[in-house]
Amino acid sequence: QVQLVESGGGLVQPGGSLRLSCEASGNIFRRSTMAWYRQASGRKREWVAFQTEGGYTDYNEPVKGRFTISRDSAKTKVYLQMTNLKSEDTAVYYCNVFPSRDATSWGQGTQVTVAS
Image (cartoon, rainbow, N blue to C red; front, side, top):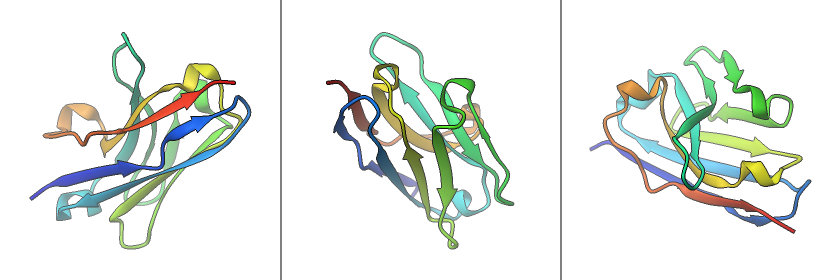
Protein backbone atom coordinates (compact mmCIF):
# COMPACT_ATOMS: atom_id res chain seq x y z
CA GLN A 1 0.00 0.00 0.00
CA VAL A 2 1.30 3.42 -0.95
CA GLN A 3 1.80 5.69 2.03
CA LEU A 4 3.45 9.04 2.57
CA VAL A 5 4.18 10.41 6.02
CA GLU A 6 5.60 13.90 6.39
CA SER A 7 7.16 15.24 9.60
CA GLY A 8 9.45 17.91 10.94
CA GLY A 9 7.30 20.99 10.69
CA GLY A 10 6.81 23.51 13.44
CA LEU A 11 6.93 27.13 14.45
CA VAL A 12 10.13 28.97 13.63
CA GLN A 13 11.20 32.60 13.62
CA PRO A 14 12.05 34.39 10.38
CA GLY A 15 15.59 33.54 9.38
CA GLY A 16 15.41 30.18 11.11
CA SER A 17 15.78 26.67 9.74
CA LEU A 18 13.80 23.45 9.68
CA ARG A 19 14.36 20.02 8.21
CA LEU A 20 11.35 18.17 6.90
CA SER A 21 11.26 14.41 6.41
CA CYS A 22 9.03 12.24 4.31
CA GLU A 23 8.82 8.49 4.58
CA ALA A 24 7.49 6.93 1.40
CA SER A 25 6.42 3.32 1.35
CA GLY A 26 5.84 1.53 -1.91
CA ASN A 27 8.30 0.61 -4.63
CA ILE A 28 6.93 3.22 -6.98
CA PHE A 29 8.67 5.96 -5.04
CA ARG A 30 12.09 4.38 -5.39
CA ARG A 31 11.82 4.72 -9.16
CA SER A 32 10.16 8.11 -9.23
CA THR A 33 11.07 11.75 -9.21
CA MET A 34 10.06 12.91 -5.75
CA ALA A 35 9.10 16.41 -4.77
CA TRP A 36 8.07 18.61 -1.93
CA TYR A 37 4.96 20.70 -2.36
CA ARG A 38 3.33 23.28 -0.14
CA GLN A 39 -0.08 24.81 0.23
CA ALA A 40 -0.60 28.06 2.05
CA SER A 41 -3.99 28.96 3.45
CA GLY A 42 -6.31 30.06 0.66
CA ARG A 43 -3.82 29.24 -2.09
CA LYS A 44 -3.27 26.41 -4.52
CA ARG A 45 -0.71 23.74 -3.81
CA GLU A 46 2.61 24.51 -5.50
CA TRP A 47 5.74 22.53 -6.05
CA VAL A 48 8.77 23.55 -4.02
CA ALA A 49 11.57 21.24 -5.09
CA PHE A 50 12.09 17.91 -6.80
CA GLN A 51 14.83 15.34 -7.16
CA THR A 52 14.97 12.70 -9.88
CA GLU A 53 15.94 9.09 -9.31
CA GLY A 54 19.34 10.01 -10.75
CA GLY A 55 19.85 12.90 -8.37
CA TYR A 56 19.02 15.92 -10.51
CA THR A 57 17.34 18.64 -8.49
CA ASP A 58 15.37 21.76 -9.25
CA TYR A 59 13.71 24.38 -7.13
CA ASN A 60 10.83 26.74 -7.52
CA GLU A 61 12.09 30.29 -7.74
CA PRO A 62 10.89 31.54 -4.32
CA VAL A 63 13.02 28.96 -2.48
CA LYS A 64 16.14 28.82 -4.65
CA GLY A 65 19.27 29.18 -2.61
CA ARG A 66 17.44 28.58 0.66
CA PHE A 67 15.99 25.05 0.43
CA THR A 68 17.73 21.77 -0.34
CA ILE A 69 16.02 18.53 -1.26
CA SER A 70 17.70 15.18 -0.74
CA ARG A 71 16.89 11.48 -0.58
CA ASP A 72 18.40 8.62 1.35
CA SER A 73 20.30 5.93 -0.51
CA ALA A 74 17.42 3.47 -0.27
CA LYS A 75 15.16 6.14 -1.73
CA THR A 76 12.49 5.58 0.88
CA LYS A 77 12.94 8.95 2.55
CA VAL A 78 12.94 12.45 1.15
CA TYR A 79 14.20 15.46 3.05
CA LEU A 80 13.81 19.19 2.70
CA GLN A 81 16.35 21.35 4.47
CA MET A 82 14.93 24.85 4.76
CA THR A 83 17.07 27.81 5.77
CA ASN A 84 16.53 31.56 6.02
CA LEU A 85 12.82 30.95 6.38
CA LYS A 86 10.43 33.76 5.58
CA SER A 87 6.84 34.39 6.60
CA GLU A 88 5.76 33.57 3.06
CA ASP A 89 7.09 30.03 3.54
CA THR A 90 4.26 29.38 5.99
CA ALA A 91 2.25 26.49 4.59
CA VAL A 92 1.45 22.82 4.91
CA TYR A 93 4.24 20.87 3.23
CA TYR A 94 3.70 17.58 1.41
CA CYS A 95 5.90 15.14 -0.43
CA ASN A 96 4.84 13.14 -3.44
CA VAL A 97 5.88 12.13 -6.91
CA PHE A 98 6.58 14.81 -9.48
CA PRO A 99 4.72 16.04 -11.40
CA SER A 100 1.67 16.16 -9.14
CA ARG A 101 -0.69 14.95 -11.87
CA ASP A 102 0.90 11.52 -11.40
CA ALA A 103 0.11 11.47 -7.68
CA THR A 104 -2.62 9.06 -6.62
CA SER A 105 -2.85 9.93 -2.93
CA TRP A 106 -1.48 12.49 -0.51
CA GLY A 107 -0.27 12.33 3.06
CA GLN A 108 -1.47 14.63 5.80
CA GLY A 109 1.44 17.01 5.37
CA THR A 110 3.38 18.89 8.01
CA GLN A 111 2.65 22.45 9.04
CA VAL A 112 5.42 25.01 8.84
CA THR A 113 4.73 28.37 10.45
CA VAL A 114 7.25 31.19 10.20
CA ALA A 115 6.46 33.97 12.63
CA SER A 116 8.21 36.13 15.19
